[in-house]
Image (cartoon, rainbow, N blue to C red):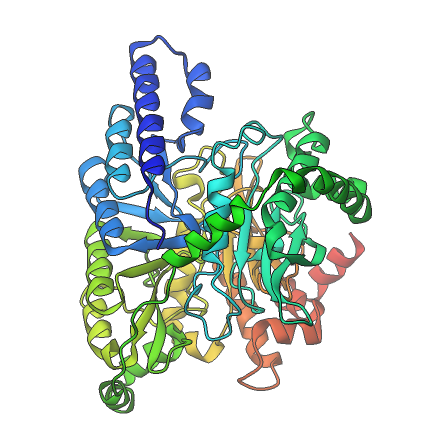
Length: 558
């Protein structure tokens, strides 16, 4: 993991000192809320529906046990004993008092964490594949690249007041576990024909009211050109980006309006200017960062405990089948901890659960945890022989739900329960869907099926790239839920297609149930996933399941 330098410590401490003074001025009345707003947003503080919300950065989703313990302590001392992990690999505290926020930031600084650039029209927290450094299919660990981008973008003088927020993701595998194509800018580590490592550059993706899949700007960018090329891209957008309409201010609109060829021409032109400004110091810094991301000292031992538990304990076997992934080291596995027990709030973890996960990581997981964009927690390096003990401890704290990638592993934004922008509830819908399919005992029969729910058009729940996406809207004061089908957040990324008219709050769960029943009837065999079936048969049979023949005809006519 990256360890703060003296400069990093001093930088964060000074930012916290400045913000403490700004908070004191707001509380005294010397600053109005309008004057305070841009200052608090620069430090990750939002004013939500009921209270302030502090969004804390977890750069590229990586946490140490000590950091997770500190997050738990903050939840207990200054919030309501829990935190909410987000699709940007951050954690949010929903109930802090304004007067306590400076103390929360100082506490974060003690463990090399902060809330800088988790909001505002700037470059947000750089995210990464949550299996980075562990995945069996990885070309290279992308986290050093993510850390370099984090350092470059933090307080970059040109990029602090851009047309809108800007999101970057990185990955080191062909399999996309970081939703690269739904980002403003993404770098995928690749090799060229000569075996040299570089980056595929993807630009102009994004969700929200105008969802778009990113386009490839360069198939291969040499490693040494990463920062000057990134600077060229953001600089071009910073000049061209719409400032007359915030809904059209994202780079995806700029790419759409000007075309990828013109954007490429402008970026290459700007790159000729930025490249000489980087004299190699950035590559020296990257090498120094890479040294801090050396692989753990993996142990070599047998897997008798794992084999025995897998053969004799069906509960453990079910968890292992759904929650474990292949690791690059012999005898190891990547274990995902679902924080989506049926009926619970997706992404929420209590302080007690945070401490349990931190302690397990310290004892069995080389002191490392990850937060996934799917709002779960990952133990990236665990030996298979320790997994029965790990599972037992997780089970004792309601953390052993065997549902990763299943229908109850739902991504959901906070919705109208917390967010001032939301137009409908998300959390109760997610809870009801998960509970219903747990009652039906169909979850493992259904297999891989991703449901994602957003409570407004901003799409924080990623519903556009869900197999079944749900968007909650306000229709004349009544919650109405639109359904999209066929979205995909992987390397075959796609935006889902709307099925037709929306459903009332009390109709949405039965609607999802009808869709799943149709899928189970339509699939060729148990191995064909929902997405594969949808791509094979298309929308019509699913529309029929949702609306019936007469309603389907009306929808087609409309």
